[in-house]
Every structure is written in C-alpha cells, then in structure tokens.
Image (cartoon, rainbow, N blue to C red; front, top):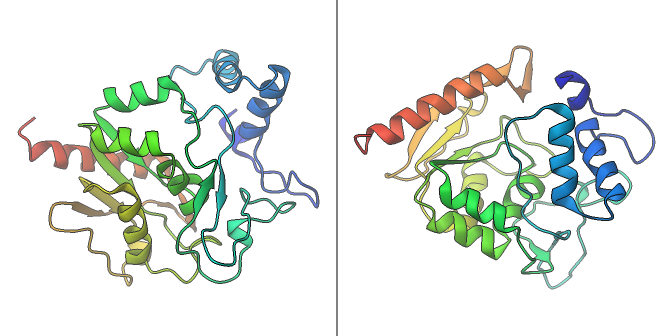
Length: 237
C-alpha cells in the first residue's frame, strides 16, 4: 500500500510526476466541495492512519516572485510551469494571498509539539512556502519545541546553482530564529555548511543505496533520533 501511494505517475499529461497519495485526498476534497480538513480526515479513516496531518491554510497560497519584473509562479507541474521551471537561481519569493487564513488545529499542533522537524522536500514549494504564511511562521518562532532542519540530499530543479550554505541561509532568514539541529547527508560533504555556534550539525548517510537522491526511511529515522537525543541532552532532559 505504501509503495502504491508513493508511486509517481509517468505520462505525457498533467498527472506526470504526481502521486496517488496526492490524488486520493484531492478527489475527496472535490467531493466535499472544498473542505480540506474533512477530506484529509476521511482518507485517514479510509487507510487506518493513526497520526494526524494538519493543513496549514483553508485556501490555496501560491508562490509569487517579488522582483521588478514580476512573474506569477504556480506550484510546479509540467502543465503550469513554476519555480522548478524558472531560468536562473531563485533567491526569494512571496505568496498570494500574503496572509492566508490558517487552520486553528495546525497552530495548536505547533504550540504543543516537543520537536518540530522541517524538511526534506522541494526547498521552496514544499518547505519555505510554509514559512511565508505569517501565522505559521510566528507559531514556529514562539513554540518551545526543538527545531530540526533536514537538508536535501542533492540539488533539484529548485535549488540548482545553490550551495548547501546558501540553501540554509535562505531558510534561516525566512524562519528568523536559531535552529537546534541540522541534519545533512555526506553526499554533499564537499559543500561546507556552517549552521552557527548554537546549532548542532549532524552528518549522516541518509540515502537509499544506489539512489543518492532518495532518503532511506530507517536511516532518516535513526538520524532524527540522534538529533533529538543530542539537543535534549544539552538541556538535561
């Protein structure tokens, strides 16, 4: 079932690159007339998922490049184009609307969390886009939770031309508060990374053997455990 849900379609049409794990909630969202939370909860019950996924916003928030020559950037897809299909290097972006409504459940989950992990994923459209939502960014900043960032294993279409340090700097500037730990893979050891004196840096082998761009779940879980143990050890907990 996990393999089926994570399979990404290969076609010449708009489904190319999308997964069934996205398509099922989208179908239920349409059946529920746009009720995002109800669609997610239905899929959780359908698949017997114990954990909870809280959407950040009740309406779409689309990335927009804030430059003199503005061009609207949509979430990347072969049909629409987007950040992943831009020429040059992405340095910054904004979202539209600039301050979308946020689900209260998401803010409560952030406030109650012991650990907040951010990443891995497409750097701008899957990760940084959340920090562009003002209420989400403020909630993460206020949260007493330990904050851990997972760096991508290899550059993708969104981070081409960016060094690892540049990726980190963009994220850190967007978040605006120190991170407790950063986890990176040795695939990019030639790319130096300095997260700052107050941040633990863990270098771990995280990829699936033979697939340097894919995270191995067991290795990733072990790295997260090491990071959590280390940041809490400093507090004596």
